[in-house]
Length: 335
Image (cartoon, rainbow, N blue to C red; front, side, top):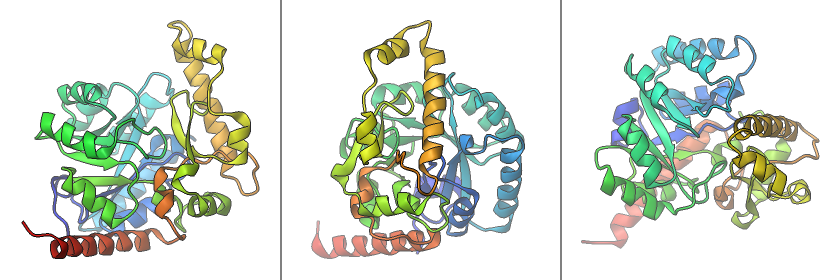
């Protein structure tokens, strides 16, 4: 079964799914398995911070890309000024002709211009119409509509409102839904709302290829949607995590002095860099087996995840669930 949408046509994939980029989770094995399964798989450039790592990975992914008929990969770039590796990573990605980009937390103009210079596509994270208007004016190729329930930096609005609003205002720009999707039924629902596909992250944390600790994977399986909370303690920008005992201990809110540093024109750039560096180090510690500093990012779709599977098995399950959901809908309704 192949499903055709504007997203599958744009990225040369068989199914309208992007394996979402996840800090410290997305790895080479996951990306390769996603590509082989006929979907698009993305990873954050910040997962490869050591000298030469990113170049080597991109060469290997491009080799795989030349060997398959469908399937693709993309790179997520944090484009705000507080990311000290942004421009270096962009240069490396452009040199290696990355097929598509996902931009987050900043102005994507430079990424769009340089990607378009060789025909690559750029999708921009948006959580509201105001941000969507800005990136549309810069020429983005698609929106990643980040709604309620997403893992990481979740948006404030439900996808059932955000997606139709984006399509009403930007009918020619494909929308990729992100937030709370871990099943074929969820995928069908966002397509019915006007999306061209879905960006799915949390479901893939509980995959055999992920190199995070078994404790993290088991927490994904055991957690329910009301165990997911929003914290300001990791990156300075609110993001969703599992409410573990350690998360409860450190709290989810910045203190008054941290908030002042975050909002002050003179200090906010450097303080955000400090907060993000500290958050990255805390997250790195949390994925190590046996760590008590359990700061685990996840979305509300943990509610529907029941077991650890291979990436290819997850994709196959999503495909079969999508097909069954479509058949069930046809049988239950008539117009």
